[in-house]
Image (cartoon, rainbow over all chains, first blue to last red; front, side, top):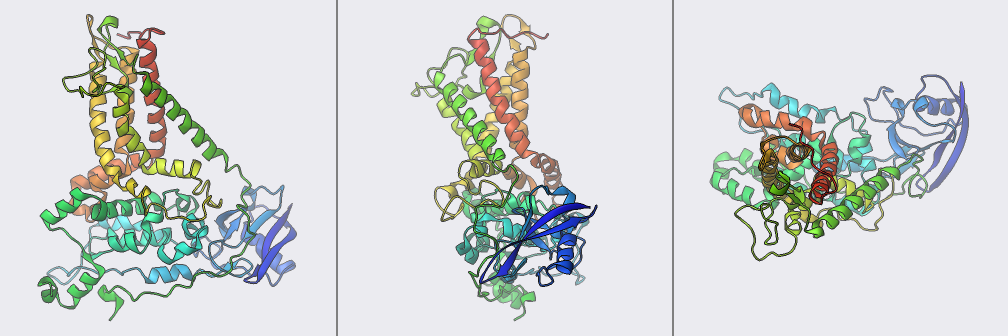
Length: 269
Length: 275
């Protein structure tokens, strides 16, 4: 049993301060175990969100010594304990109490995302996808929505005003999954450029560094999306090629009109 | 109307603001987060200082027939200025450009690397402090990213990639020409090896580029219907994962190649023949 001081942020929207909890750590324990021991022995009113304790629910995100981690997946023996271990709530989101934050920003941004709009089914009335096409999006489906990528992204972490027009890394992987989906007809590129703030990302890769599922958010989602936006908005040759070959994806509104009445949509009415 | 029908959902009201938790400090990190941006900064400054010095020298960039070699520095290839030393340029050159040819040529690799997705991360972190490290407060009051001039120009990266590929073709031709030993036939020297390695590393860096990955196959939505592009994408993807390493190694080696040719051309060392 090793002695350690856990320095935990206590407070709510009206303010707060650090409180030190001297405790002991057993071999193999994770930060969440120690926080639970503090709840049980010293501070029964300490607020902390958790659920699965297996790194799959994404509930126990917090900042440990200044960097976001899942408390249930961070072993105490990986943290230097000579100094107090500092635990704070995720900085980017409004605090509810102690280590619990209001992450509804992420759900509101998710509701702004134009949903999957499949093209017409095949002659047999079904949809078919090859395994190689299914595989591509699987990486993005590993996301557990811990929102640590959103939390660490400096675009909104240090600039609250950008939240109004920035979807953030978690949503960008969802956009990429849908944009590269072979059955989808929506074109979200202009939306990404103008309203979802893809251009705000400056590729500093912090989202990738903190992702507990090791999703290559920047390399496999954000940069490919940026390149797709270049195709649609900044590359004159690509624009000319699309015009000549008539390869234009429908915007969200066009796809909706097409599904309501394909004949009318084709006629451009 | 259901959102399942592909309709754009109604605008969702977003509540901004709200008190944040934690102390108002720049960072709570205790690890050595300053080290990496400082090393990057120092290394990039070192390279820029050397490259600028080398570009303005306008001498000692070509080892020609007098030394039984055909070695040209990558900073000066293709030698398209009117002041190029005899034997270093081809049939095409800008007769009106009398300054160092490197000042024209280096625009391409400079543009390619400045707009490169990896180097963007490197200099945004180390020079612009935006942010200096993850979890460290951004050094600016306002932030608009790459949405406005001048940073919106980063979007022309693919055009610098195309120009970079052309330059690579020329540097590959230089590497092939380096097997030519005027007066001695065909041979292989340390200089040949250096030019070959330099060309190979620059190809690896260019091919692993994110724009290349997108153009070769990343833009395709249905891989199963485009097996060739999917094949290319599968080759480039693992290389792309090493883009950072290739960026540093190729940057270092291109400077070392220039240095080697410079030392041989100025007579400080001789280029040993291997066979």
